[in-house]
Every structure is written in C-alpha cells, then in structure tokens.
Length: 458
Picture 1: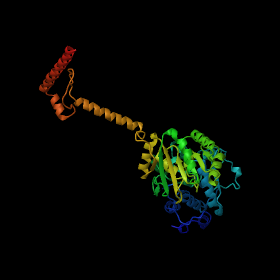
Picture 2 (picture 1 turned 90 degrees about the vertical axis):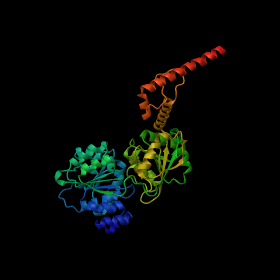
Picture 3 (picture 1 turned 120 degrees about the vertical axis):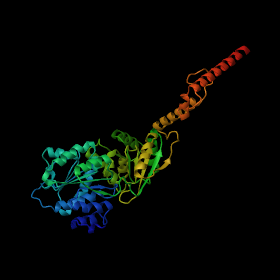
Picture 4 (picture 1 turned 45 degrees about the vertical axis):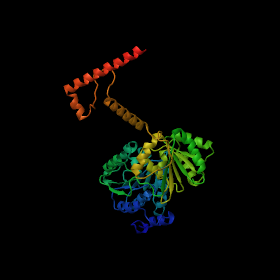
C-alpha cells in the first residue's frame, strides 16, 4: 500500500514521501495506522527496522492536529525506555510536525526539563522517558492530565519491573473522563509482559507481523572459543575485516566491561567509542553521532544500544557476550539489516554460552552457522558432564549388582537382577535363598583351599 492511499493529513503524506523518501508502507504501518486512526487500542509487534516509529507517529500526529481543544496542555505522549531512543523519536516527530505546526518537547536525559526554553507555551506532543516525565510533573513543569493518546515504544522493556510503577503513575495522572487510548509497540513481547499489557489496555487490537522475527537480510555466524580468548580474537577479526566493516556495534553485558574493552581496543590503534549508562547524555549522543558520521567505525555498548537506535550504515553486530534471553538477541541483531538491507551478526561463544545459542536458534527458528568449533569435550557444559557421569555411575552399579560374588560369603549375594520381575519373585522364595546361601558357602570354602595350597607351595 502507498502512503498516498492512507487517510492521513496531506501535509504529513508530503513530508513522508518528499523529505523522508518513503512511498510504500511496510506491513506494520499498513495494519497499524488505520486502526490507530479508528481510535482502537493497538499492540504492534514487528521485527526491528520495519518502520514501527512511523506506524504510530503518523496517526498520532494526525489525530492531535485534528482534535479541537480549548487548552494548551499536551494531548499525546510517547514513552521510551532510553534517552537515545527518545532523542531519535523526537527528531522524527519534529520533521513530521513541522508543516502542521506541531509543538513537540523532549523530556529525557540527565539535565532537568526547562519549559522556558520553548518558543511557545503550547505543547501538543511529549517524547519522554518515564522517570524524567514524572520528575517534571512533580515539579509542576508539565501537565499530563489531558492526555488523549499514550504510546509505549519498546513496551516489553517499559513494562519490566523497573518501569512498571512509573507507567502506572503516568496513566493514573490522566483524568478519567479523557479515556486515553494506549498503544504499545515492540519487536518482542514475552508472555508475562503480554499479560500486563492486556491488563493495562483492556481489550487491545493485536497487530502482529512476525513475533521474534529476525531481519530477512541478516546472516548469523558463531565462533566458539574459551572466554579468555575472546579479546584476542576480536582484535584480529576487526583488523582482518577492516575493509568489510563500515560500522559495527559490539555488545557486552556490563558498563565496566564496556569501558575495559574500549580502552583495550583504543590501545590497539582501533577507532572506537563507548556507549553505556555511565555516560552523560551529551557523551552518549556524541558517541552515536560519531558512528553515524563515520568518525569511528566501532561502538562498544551495553543493552542501552539495543533499543530503537537506527544507524543506516551498520554492517556488523558483534555479540562479545551472548545475551541471556532471546528477546534481547532479537533487539541486538535488529540494529543491522534494517529496512531491507543486509547485515551480519557475529557471536563469540564460550562453552558456558553454548546452551544460550541453542535456545536462540530454537526460539527464532533460524540456524546460526558455526565457523569455528570447539573440541567436543569443551562443547559440553558442566551440567551435561554431570549428567553423563551420573549415567555412567548408574550403569556400573547395575553391572555390579548383576555380577556373581565369587569371593567371601556375602548376605547380599544374588545371581539375578533385583529390579526385574523375576528377581523380585525369586527373592521372595525361601528355597532360593537357601540355595544361594549354600552356593556362596561352597565358593568361600574353595577360595580358602586355593589360598592354603599357595601357602603350602611357598
């Protein structure tokens, strides 16, 4: 479907086609835009890079500018889990809203929100992170009582335990008579988060393109190695593939790990920036801008960089640490191969992370090609080794219980398997018990004779 065929404001269509350069809608846009325009609560699920931002911003702006109100309070709100994503949404909203005179504000980052910076006192649309929005509200700098539309971008992360209370406080701050429409968008939605979403929205309309979907142009590779070999391998890989890597994001679990890895790569003469929660908003924006402009071609980041960040030239995603859950993997690799382009995901897998890779393959119905494989013994996890040892022990015990005791008399002497049906029947037979006793006595006596003969010979 073409954007021109949608029932949107003509100025919005003009901006999308002429300034942003999009003529055809993606699947998520085709399904979600008409439903939001029809005032339905929507949950939109689609892979990263399929245009979810435009899928909710276009109808949201259209509804705001076509709604008559007798106040200057904001009507729309878009919540994002990270400052970087909030800034990105804000930049798109400004471009879309410029021809229709939309007043948009961004409430995110470490610096306090200052309404005095606005050219006008009127606010139509807020782009914010939950914590900063509540802070601005408590200080009386913003009024969200008259909101008519609320959008949760990356809703799976927003509805996590860390943000849940803030989200509920924001929704409760809106007057009941306004009955705000709530829309949620993400690439993934775990079952437990889906229950929370249904509880908040009521009866939502689910728009699902492909749950746990990976980009079509994505190629996945894994290199298996010991944990201590990862840094050396990464340096060699970045040097060998220097001509192929236009831009790369390296994902690692902790901000301390990101700092240490960045420092090491800089010492090796590589152009690297770091992105994590320990930096100021200005430092984080500078790092992203340097990667976009090509000042550096490698960005070491934590999970902060996996949500909503769009870098068109990103050719590689490198998982230095394999993510602990499948959803996070989908978000990470979704930074590349966006909007129909191709991209490569490289996974550095230690023996302890092999089970995570198997879990990812099963959940995403995809195959990660193994380029470098560990020896079979090292590929086994501690759990698998323990289970194998336990199985061998059980087999040995079973063999031992079946063997005939040819040594000293033993009351537990048995010629049968005590766990079998026949064994249980024989054990109950007094005659068999006597037979076993007599035989064991004979064997014991013959053993004594052999020992005495040996002594006599000596």
